[in-house]
Image (cartoon, rainbow, N blue to C red; front, side, top):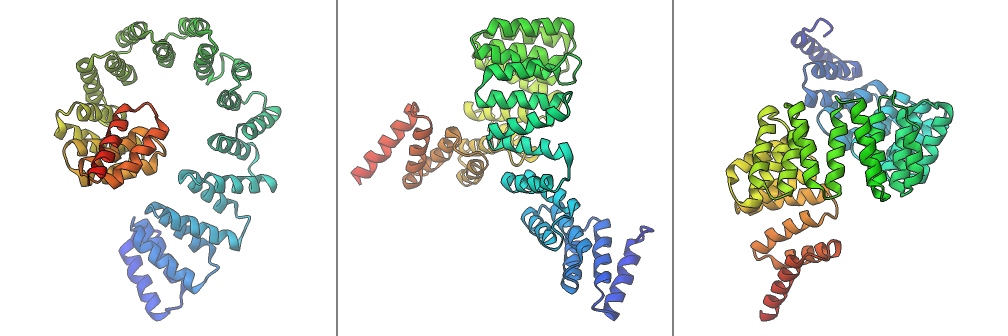
Length: 415
């Protein structure tokens, strides 16, 4: 196996377990060999047999969990890591694997408990505290996040990324004045200074001091004219103030300066769509795709635009299939794919993708409304009606939904 002669290794190891069927090491090294051959399914089989023969075989369990991860068997991998922790509760390597997997699977409370356990036993240091703070942010427990980040900064006053997180925590909590104070502490020499400037500009806008935010961005652009994100923030700030012409001017001037930057072209495309120049918007999205064929945002935007317009549906389908293949767990992309299937009257495919979209993005009235529309088109009113009612709870101003509910109710009364 070490000499990369995998077929010979497999042959010899299989001979071994014929002679010694209780050789847990024979099964373990078969699993290792198959792992080296990128045959994870076979590897899992042999690791499990090794563990069956030796239940406390920690290394085999670790290799099993890693192979399960490789196959996308995340729940099984989590279960295996948890079994390992029953054997050795302070196996830091296993805990770190499990934390990463829990975060990836959005099991944030489980990850938080593990991180707190590590911190309690004195492992991990400030990196552990950083992760705890970020999970508090994800869970919208902003006071606890603020406390965590503040404690880190007491020990590391120049931890500028933590300073940014602290400002963001105050911002999310709804304390703009304190958020501004925290963002101001990040010096121009810090790598994330421009992120702080972006936050500050929008905070000033929210406080009714938009011109102060515009001035800050313009001053920073003069000092750092090559930072594309500054121009994008300025354009976005104008757009948020409904000063679309000024936003468009910033973006088109940027395009001359950065002609191949797809972020700029994409934003121009979105703004054209917003001001009613849909053909120009489509042209810009095609430019993005020509420059970066695997840009999922542009693929999704163009595909959904075609679906909404009811044109070029076969082309739209190809764009959206590709977008979903690039981001299979993006609920909004799934919604777009479901919507183009609906427009093509491929209702089963539409329902499949829209139901998945509702799982990935909870309580989104547009996605729920799309799923309701498919059932409505199929005259499945018992399924459509509760979905439409859910849409109205989330977005009471949807007159189109109110009309569909009236139609369903009227038809039910007639029957």
